[in-house]
Structure formats: C-alpha cells, structure tokens
Image 1 (cartoon, one colour):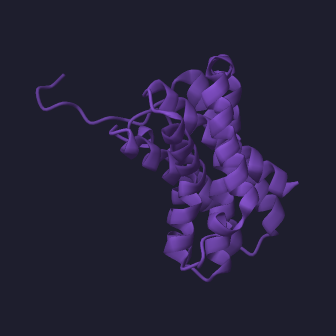
Image 2 (spheres, helix red, strand yellow):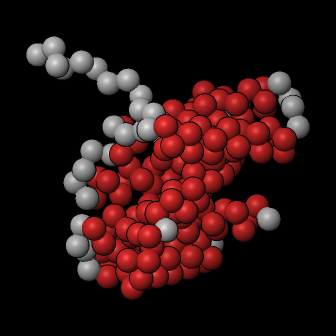
Length: 203
C-alpha cells in the first residue's frame, strides 16, 4: 500500500514537472527530463545528504519507469492533463505528505539528529520542484507562492517529535502526512501565502 501511494506521489510530481516543461515549449526529451527531475530530485538530494549509495531512485526501476512514463503521457495528452489540474494538485499534495514523512523517518532511522532529519524530510518533499524551477530559470515556487515548504516542515517536525517521544511510528507518520496534505489543500483553496517583506519604497 505504501509503495503504491509513493508511486502515485512520484507520478503526481512527474506530471507537474512535465506540465511546466510543456508550458515552457520544451521538446519531448526536455519534458521527460523535467518529469524525472521533479519526481526524483528530492529523493536523490536526501540520499546524497544521508550518504546512501547508490541513491534509491537510481536502483529502483519502477520509480524511473513511472516518472518517465508520466512525462511521456503528459507530452502526448497535455490538453487533457491541464483539464485535470485540480486532481494533479491534490495528488501533488499527497505526494508531498508521503515524501516528507518518509524522508524524515529515513533520516531518523539512519541516526540523524531531529533538526537535521526535519530539514532532510522537508528537502525530500520540495527538492524536486525547486530543481524543476531552477532548470526553467524561475525563482522556485516553494519560495514565493502559497504554503508549501512551511507545510512540509511542519509535518517533518511532527514526525521528529513523535520519534523523540517514542510514539508508535505508523500513527505518527500517517498523522503527519494528513496534516501536510490538509494544510496544502487549504492553502490552495484559500490562496494562503507566507508573509512577504515590504518593499523598500513602502509599497
């Protein structure tokens, strides 16, 4: 079940990367590269930070197959995917919750201190999207729009606190994932954004 949900999250992240690539008028190779980067980038960064060699995404073929296949599907059927934008955003939120909690748990399991595990978990969730935006020469979306990174960090902290209190791992992980998804969906629905500094001219 967890593997299936993780693959759904990978597909959702890959779809968001592929849609961004199509909008940027990239060719089919560029679309697949953006799909793979968005879906697997966070996990690659996590494994590099934790010293996991080789990175999981490079030796687990279903991850590569799902991400690359999703990129191809979006390339050929992007008008239909655009119509399903809300569904893709919901799946993206689910993927964020799963990746953040899994990344945090993995870091804690490998002996990382709680604060480091929280940062690793957050990076696992948002890293792929940040890499996508950098490749498209844009300011990463997680730094300028909606409640995304904040939700990820909040879920990671909840997992770390549960680990510190020696609470059962499964309920804590599920609760943290649901919290991330709920905050993310509410942020999209209510158009919540983190505070932005006032401009120097007072505007």
